[in-house]
Length: 242
Length: 274
Image (cartoon, rainbow over all chains, first blue to last red):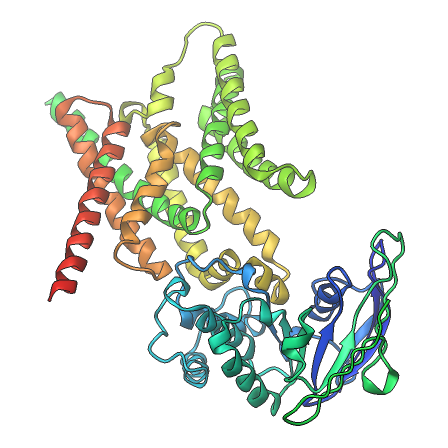
């Protein structure tokens, strides 16, 4: 369904990355800080043009319509005067032009997402009135309102409120039935019990002028770090990683 | 008879000035306050004084000089902080003082008639021309159309630029246009409130509005209303008391803000008690 082949950059952060995401995949993308995880997301999102290679979606070049994106917490200002409903509606902006009016069917969609994520009663609230877990669900709502085929999560563990954590991952499991999920994290422990497979992204050395990426594929291809989980109780295998 | 016509003109000028100033300042101010660009706006204001000085020196309309300086300094701050890796607040601080210095030097160098510096620093309705009012009127229309047509795009870019970049390639264009329009708004309002005071015209009304609502477009509407009440009242007081108009407007706005805050505070106390 989805295949990526990309390498990019003046100083190469990702080199010859090749992998494929299938429908209903739930992939954890791990690797050390600076290893290229965020770069990978940026390339998939189209924020960075790959220097070489391309991203293909259903045999077409990728466009943003099919992707939902949950960025790290830090990107939006929680004191900004914008309501939960309006934030969630902004997830539809990639389908709209710059002159965008939200139709009543858009608002129905927003209401559905709000109910689905347990945010009823907070539709007109601003983010500074919500808890950390609720804020995260608002941003998740923004990512899924367009009903994407692929959901990208950037370090959700960073701002998840532990009380809402299980809740959140349960929601993701639900969503996984209708969309593939790619979740970036450096927190191997937390996500290991929720995902179906792993991809590892790393560059070899910090000060190496042309660092390289070893992102081999999922299970079958044998990643340097390989972590396999199945069923309720996860089996975790962490091999030596240089 | 002559006095009456003069007074009539004076009132019309003040009323139209108040309407247009509150519309432009309300729209630009809500953006500035929401996006925490108050310091940047202060920098733009003071940098534009350089344009006023050069305008006098080479004999063009000082407002045109100020507009050029205002827009260039707004874009300059963006450039310096993004491309040259200079801290944004430092870049603002440098342009702020540099603009003032240029303004003072060139006004000093201007031969013959020395313009009334005070009217630019603190505003003076007496020096506001019909052309100034018309410019503010045109600016009001431009801002209403711009924010009206691109409301969601502007709102979402300003709220979460990183996310906006994932779906739009127009983020930078909109940022530059919006910042330029804000610089223009500030410059055109300098005639009313002066270089030193104009920033309050943008920041106080949204802060009054935010006491009552947290929805962006409602903040704009309340800001315009609060701005109009403050500007018109300040104008009237300054007329009857014979004190400088810019200072009186800002003073009035702050009083409104304090009263509004007091009312909201009392209302929450009462609602807690009952």
